[in-house]
Length: 150
Image (cartoon, rainbow, N blue to C red; front, top):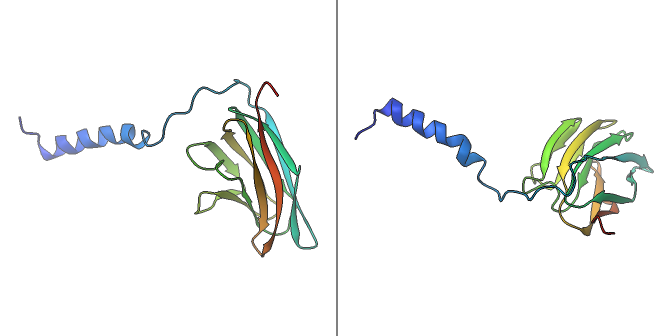
């Protein structure tokens, strides 16, 4: 049975969405249905970014809303190793731009926005806030994913 070119194209296009979403391994169900809001604020002190809290504590294996508020008069890039890749970002809005390396988000000067994320399992990594006009002096803090049992 031969398909006409238009029919073949229609069939190929109907399969496209299914293959586009099949790239990554599906995530296990979240540990909780709650989406706790967590706030990260960015300021500049002596031309260097400062992010607060210095220890960003989030629940592990959970969907979270990270509210980012910048009072810095410079663009700042937020990086958290592994958090902004592998399908863990569900939604971003406001003054946040995903950087080309896929390792961070640029927060526009005096900007604010929300990142809806899926956190990974329990663990701890360093996170950084780097001003685009002073990349040699980033702020580093601790990003801790805490399990439900402590």
